[in-house]
Length: 125
Image 1 (tube, rainbow, N blue to C red):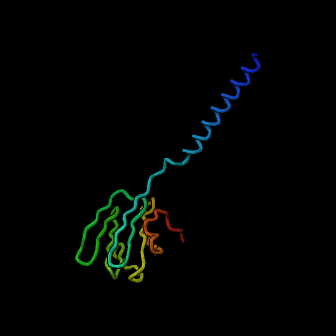
Image 2: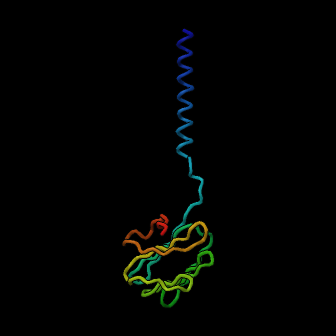
């Protein structure tokens, strides 16, 4: 009977270790900084500001929206998008994602309609 008890205790320990390993692997890598996203529609265009930013303010203007993200100024109007004073060349009906990377750099990416709220980083050129 003692051999049966030893087998059951060994199986119990193996099952407990398996559960611990699954829990550790399941939580691996989830401690990174979260990304945030803010979407706004101006005219026929949806602009999403996403990424790793700490401070964001939004101000309505007569011809669009002004967004300040960690010191970067983004002006959105129905016919123009400006990031830090640089005019971005895009069509009036194109949706845009402005991504703030972990090191504070701003990237502008044209996205397909309906893809604007994605929080994935654009590919590096």
